[in-house]
Amino acid sequence: MTPNEDVVHPEIRLEGVSLVYEAGGSTVLALDNLHCRFAAGRVTAIIGPSGCGKSTMLQITRGFMQASRGTVSFIGPDGQPMARPPRMATVWQSFNLFPWRTVEDNVAFGLEMAGVPPTERQARAREALRLVDLTGFERKYPGQLSGGMRQRVGMARALVMDPDVLLLDEPFGALDAQTRLVLQEQLAAMVERTGKTVLLITHSIEEAILLADTVYVLTARPGRVAAEVQIDLPKPRSIASTHDARYAGYFEQIYGLLKSEVLRSMHGEVEAG
Amino acid sequence: MMRDRAPEGDVALRPVRTGAAPADRVTGWVAVAVVLIAWEVLCRLLEVSSLYLPRPTQIAVALYDLFVHKQAITDLAVTLYRIFGGFAIGLVCGVALGLAMAVSRRLQSIADVFIAALYPLPKITLIPLLIIWLGTGGPFMLTISALGALFPVIINTLLGVRQCDQGLVVTARDLGASERQIVRHVLLPAAIPSVFAGARLGLGVSIILVVAAEMVVGKLGLGARLYLAGQVLETETVFAVLVVLAALGIAVTKGLDSLDTLANRWRG
Image (cartoon, rainbow over all chains, first blue to last red; front, side, top):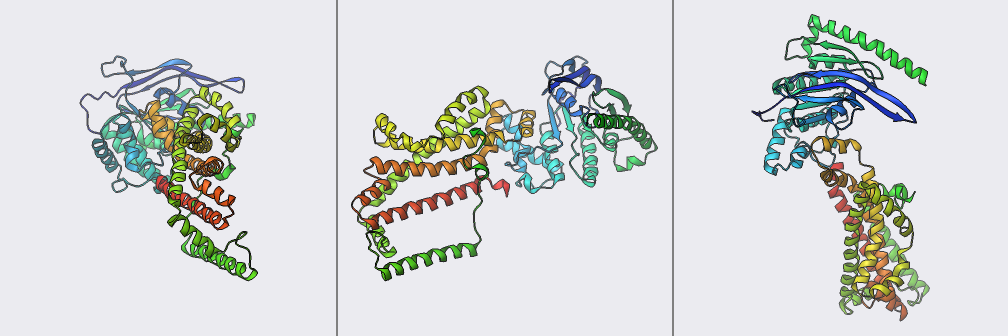
């Protein structure tokens, strides 16, 4: 979380990324020839109907999954591909906290794996927890926290690694609407401050507009880029941004694109069912 | 598939939570007292021969005699050493093997066959073979005890690792953990409740096997005492040793409960 002089927030380019997998003897095309650019130090949101391969796209970007075709490249500030992949950390929809570790030890997990000495990692974990307003909960176990608090631990755990790229996999999808609003605002402010390259997977239009500089709308399976929408609203954004005249325009534009895709995927399900 | 199931079905999947309410505990002890008094009174009224059924007071005297005059404390110590020494070996080997099997498909397919063959085999039938190989001394006792604990621990460790949430494994990898660190910091802790269930079963088997082995070959140990007392028709002593074994069982169960609570306090 400490500001780093040699930080390189990279640009990420997906070029012609496709994913084909085998299921029950037939091949399924999950992602079809995706071209995306996640700008350096900006927030890019991916939005699309359920099952369009949003999370798969994140896994491919993270390097946990291999694309069937196409490339993922990380471009450094010099405009050249980076020699090594940048540091990345993920915030998960299902929180994925280690239930047997205290809040503090959850946040310190990555530092511990990297061999950071106990006193230093404790200090950094506490600082990260302070930033997500969880001071006083260091010794609690995840099972003792509410959903919103758990996801703040998840955010602290990713941020404490000071990643160049922050991946958010439907981070607020499992939370109630009010908690989500508060966390979205907090995250917007935090991301703005750190200036990291952020990839946000979401199915909430509101969340995409509130957080992102660029929104990619994906089609129903197979996932293709239906549109790229630039969100030009002043920052830091908050719930007040929804009163901006442009907000409604963006919302309608994205909703219009999504609606036909959702209908199409529902129709497909009816046919398949 | 035997490897998919713990020996006692679903019961073994999660450690039993004990710790009755105080009122229940009092009720339990009152019941014990009532049974003992009824036993004493009925034996006196019906003039039951102490050769068949000694009275609780006679058993208490035999118990006192055993520890004060007959150095039974040595036997207790020897038996405890054999049980826990062997159990510890079985536990460590079982967890290591279970983890290794959970991680390596090849090792698992090799080990599966052997476990399928050896697990249902009553370990007590191995006593003659082990005596031929190891004699009747310490190594034999530790081996039989370790064998008792080994299989329940392997199977439950494997089960515990299998039940680990894959999301946690991916999360650890995302946070930079190596495969080895994932085993140590994710799979092992995730399996701990299940390992405890296996250890509980395994320790029970270790106790049975050590006492049985002592009855067959031992000159020392509670099993030997029990067998010798039976041979010379000292029924009070037989009961006294049984009381010690029962007390040992209670102590072990309670001890494991406390350890379990300590190790799994995050579930609170």
